[in-house]
Amino acid sequence: MENDNNQLTQKATFMIESPNEHLDLILENLRKVEGVTALQESSDQSKITLEFDPTRIDPSQLINLTSQAGFSMERNE
Image 1 (tube, rainbow, N blue to C red):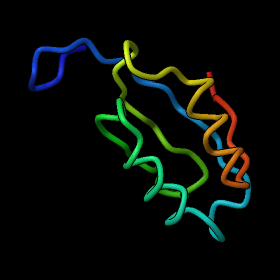
Image 2 (image 1 turned 45 degrees about the vertical axis):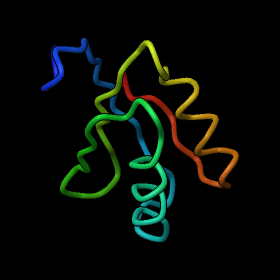
Image 3 (image 1 turned 90 degrees about the vertical axis):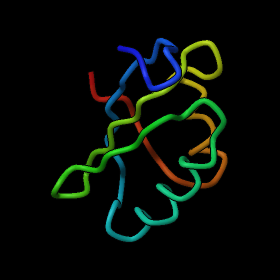
Image 4 (image 1 turned 135 degrees about the horizontal axis):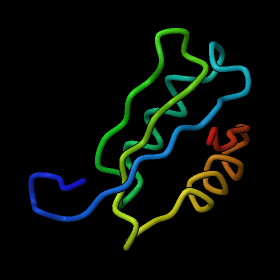
């Protein structure tokens, strides 16, 4: 998949623990991560799908960053 700048991007879906309590904060922080190019939440707010530049960040780093902020997120493959 290519974004507007013709860079290759990848998508990954993650499950969020306790999404209703923390979703806004999680989304706000993930939008600030360098390499995240798009973000979409599921209608029930239990999952988020991130589009990212794999040359700048990978899914395990996104999970670690979220964990360091005190939130639980795991990849939904």
